[in-house]
Image 1 (cartoon, rainbow over the protein chains, first blue to last red):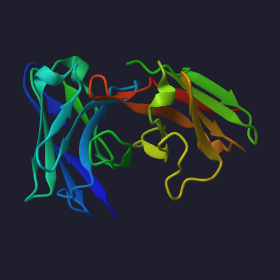
Image 2 (image 1 turned 30 degrees about the vertical axis):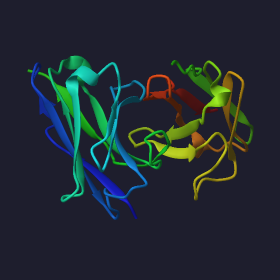
Image 3 (image 1 turned 120 degrees about the vertical axis):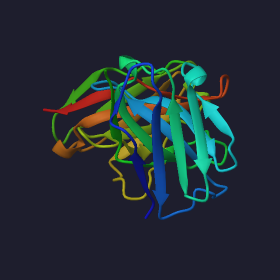
Image 4 (image 1 turned 120 degrees about the horizontal axis):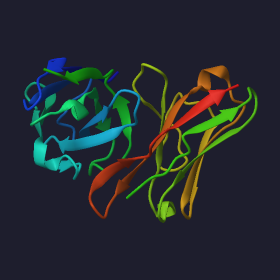
Length: 122
Length: 107
């Protein structure tokens, strides 16, 4: 049974960098069949895709966030990570990691982590 | 690329609910649907327009043509009350797009 678990600080100060890690268990992040994505959801609002990464390091980013986002992968730890720089209150959200079942990053997200709330506040 | 969903849909128990997702020529794309209950992570309920993951009841079905994709729930139950999101890949700009979500209320 594949499991994804987000971890990282729940509180980040404005202008600083938000850093989260997703640990994958029950499956290998190095599988050639999947991409791995980050999605966020501001309180009371809808889903917003942040970006996705392949085990080789190939990435896709949301154009609206691309200038502030870096997604990386550590296959030795079976983890992938998100960094979002220069955060503001508008970045306050529940952040989810998820598996994209396609090998080109264009398919559905079939497994999701439970999500972690990150609040941006001084 | 913009996906448009109605903010809310209401249905009586046992009836059929239809949730639409509108987009320019969406019929040429693969549409995926997620159910999100309050306080929980989204769950995939339909992928590639009309396929169901294992464990999803046959009451959930999907269709996609022209400028509208539709998620249909038959014999609606109280437990179906949730937010539903559609999702496509926009190949023109290489990114994932989600619809704004529809809150399904079971009366």
